[in-house]
Image (cartoon, rainbow, N blue to C red; front, side):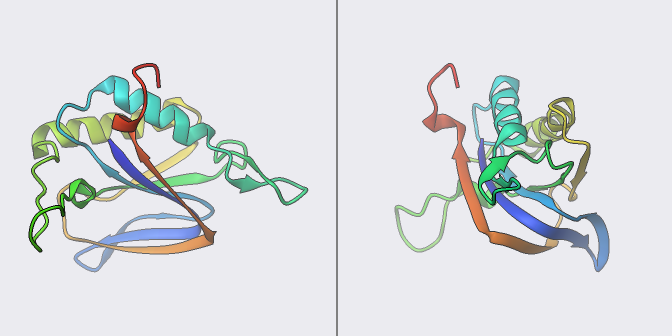
Length: 153
C-alpha cells in the first residue's frame, strides 16, 4: 500500500459538486492499494497512521498522534499513487490493484483506522472523480509504502 499523509486543519472531498466528506483538524490520507497488498499490510499501515506522532504537544514538539488530539481522518482512494514513470511520458498504473479487490481493502482500511482509535473516519467515493480540498498544516506531509518495510512492519 502507498499512502500520502498530510496533517491538516481542514479537508473535504466533493463528487459532482456535492461534499461527501469533510473534517477539521486531523489527517488527509491518500491511499493506493497495490497488487499483492493484503489485510496484513492494511493492519500495519492503519496502526502506524493512527499512532504517528506529528501533532504538536504543549511544548510545540511533534509528539502527539491523531488519536491523542481527538482528530479525524479523511481517507481518499488514489490509484495514481501507483504511477510508474520510468518509461516514456505517460505514467503506467498497472501496479495498482484491480478495482474490486482495491475497494474491499480500502473499506477494510477505514475500519482498521477506527479499530485503532480514530474516532472519526470520513471517505471519498471509491473510483469517482473527486475534488479534494486540503489545508495542509505546517506543511507536514509523510509518504508510506508498505513494500519498503520488513515483513514484521
